[in-house]
Length: 237
Image (cartoon, rainbow, N blue to C red):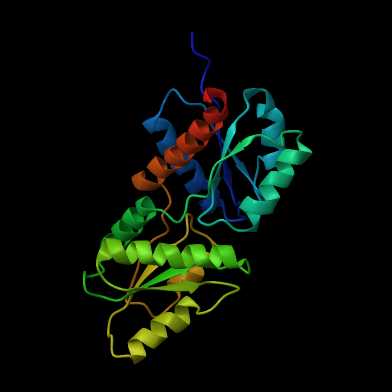
C-alpha cells in the first residue's frame, strides 16, 4: 500500500480582522472539496491562531508540505518561514512557492473585475499590498503583465504600502490622462485593512479580494503538487 500523501500546511499571513481569517478558512474548505483525500491544515504567521510553530509541532511526524498563502516571494517566504522550519528542527521540510504571480491569479482577478461591473475597455490598476522587498515589488509587476495578457489591455501595477505608485496615485493619473472610468483590481487574498484602503480610491469599479475563488484553490493544490514532485526527484534519480 502506498504511503499517505504528505499533509498540506497552508501558511497564511494572519490579521486582526476576523473577516480575513474567515476568508482564509473558506478558501481551504474549497481546497479540501477539490481533493477530499488530502489532509489540509492551516496556520498563520502573525495575529491569528494557530501559529506556524504550533502547527509545525503538531504535524512534524507527517512531514507536511508548506504552501504559503502569499502573493509574492517576499521576506516571509525567503526568511520567516525557513527560520521557523529551522527552529522546529525541520530545515529540510518542503516549502512550496508563493502563490503569485501566476496565470490562475489573473483568471481570478479578471472574474472579480467582471463581478464589480468593470467594462472590457476600462484601464486597470492592480493594487498589491506593497513591500520594501524588491523581489515582492517585481512579483506585483509580473502579475500586472499576466493580468494585462488576460484582459487584452494595459494594467498599471500599484502598491498599498512601501512602494510607489500608490493605487490612489495610479487611478488619479489615469483619470487626469482623460480616462473617465478606471477599474481597480484588488490583488489581495482577504478583506481587511489593505482591502479597505484599496476600496477608498477614486476608481469607478473595484474588484473584491480574491478570497475563496476556485482558481485560487486550484493554485494552492498546484503549488503543493509542484513541491511534492520536486521532493521526489532525488529519490527517483
